[in-house]
Image 1 (tube, helix red, strand yellow):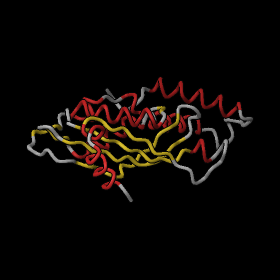
Image 2 (image 1 turned 90 degrees about the vertical axis):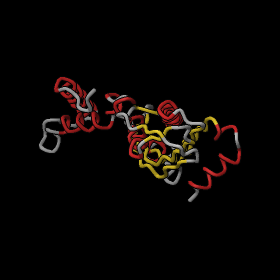
Image 3 (image 1 turned 180 degrees about the vertical axis):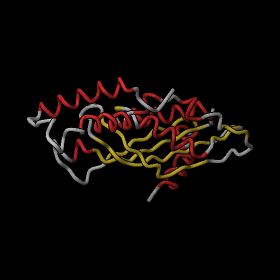
Amino acid sequence: MTDNPSELELEALSSYYRGIIEGVGEDPHRDGLKDTPKRAAKAMSFLTRGYRQDLEEIVNGAVFESDNDEMVVVRDIELYSLCEHHLLPFIGKAHVAYIPKGKVLGLSKFARIVDMFARRLQIQENMTLQIAEAIEEVTEARGVAVVIEAKHMCMMMRGVEKQNSSMTTSVMRGDFRNHLPTREEFLRYIAK
């Protein structure tokens, strides 16, 4: 798979953006806008590159044998996504944890997994679950936890226009779901 769209895909997206510009009453040929359709197409392609990625490619064999069986936590992984309802951004951070069972995952792979799912048209609830399932699949861990905190522009820029609202979602699997002290330990690690 490739992260880059074809020229044909970019040209199709560009024509849609030209239509949007015309649809809002602007002239796509005026100086400030004449290259905007192509720039917007490239930006949208970048923001949705998760569709052109897969888990095996992202992990790239970076799963290693380990005797560690204690919790591993990666905090504050920045994420940028687009809500599937309004195509407006939501921005936040993910906290992930797992309890290894003979295998550990390379540290950077957590951020790459988060990005792969964030770079799709998405709702936060589903993205949280997808990240947890992917980490569980790759590591075969005894437990996986994912918490995402994000601010949604569809809530801030339009509709109810609540500037200070944020959303938190969580998925707890295995030991994190079934063993309250394990869940509480994780939540203490990620507390501000």
